[in-house]
Image (cartoon, rainbow, N blue to C red; front, side, top):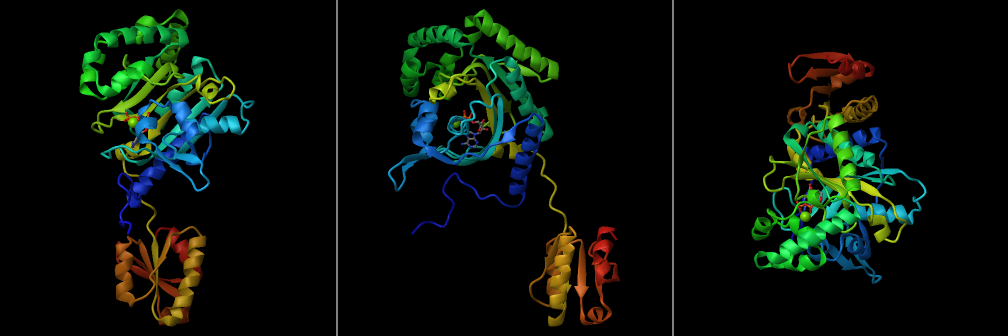
Length: 414
Ligand code: ATP
Ligand code: MG
């Protein structure tokens, strides 16, 4: 029999956790909308091909982390490990290639088979943006700026720093890759097994390795900056100038990469030291070759994704929902009046709780437990007079109010 527990690395979201999560999504969506991003929701699973091709067979995500299965019809499908591939797939299959530039915002669950720890889950959630169709660095500036504004609107920008790097264009990147491989070949004895494999197929990824031996070697590896051609330097210069202009500070990080071949130019991460080892809050870059890799027309793109759980841990708790009013009927006859009154009050915009059973004492206790601001008591004498007793649960003072005046009375805050 299946264990009655959530699958390792998955979590139920309720109460304050759910409110934090929702606050992150709504704040992000609202901010992104002001930049002209509109929401896209892609399916949470795609044909495995969509991810295998875009993320590369050698990436950690594809080789170790994907939830892939064959469905009953014999199709190989994968629970999405990230959002960009699905958005690019939709861009092509929905025929959006004539609608450029296109600005899309997404949010939702992602799935990766990883070792669960603080800030790392098997089902986690991301918000993300993609800006398609703009080759100029203005797009990079705008995408980074909207990310920073979202973190700022959530009140956490102060504890976060933007790390920035450039991979340059195809030519610069190729030159760097050659230099990097030569350097790593000289140090191959100290590389981890994973990195030895990457050395052949995806050497840039080694810069991103978490293995300590790898990291020591990588610390002295050549820097992208020394291999940039003029066009790439100009591009990067414009991005930095834009960030200076809007007042977003950044730190140059020569080791920052996005490992896959279709990435170029700007790479960046918003990082914090407030979350322990899992310090990357938001990560992104320019991926001019991606859409073409997937079989679409050559289309430049730039975007980022951010982990909602990591952000949710950093924000202040959002306001709790409005305190309810407790409507309390005493006796069977009052019940139907209470149902009608509760309905009317809810329609007028108030939050109302109605005890479902028990005597006055029990229901008052329940009202206090729910944090109700007032109790509206409907007893026999009240019913005869067409009133209810409204008790302020903070002060204990109470007063009789005509049934059709209760909404106004409560809203007047008295
Ligand atoms: P890491 O190096 O931490 O594994 P990554 O390079 O795999 O990160 P991305 O694919 O760039 O991460 O995802 C973007 C963001 O999504 C991360 O910066 C992080 O905030 C969040 N994220 C990624 N994987 C997880 C996970 N397993 N659990 C929670 N959040 C995650
Ligand atoms: Mg990862």
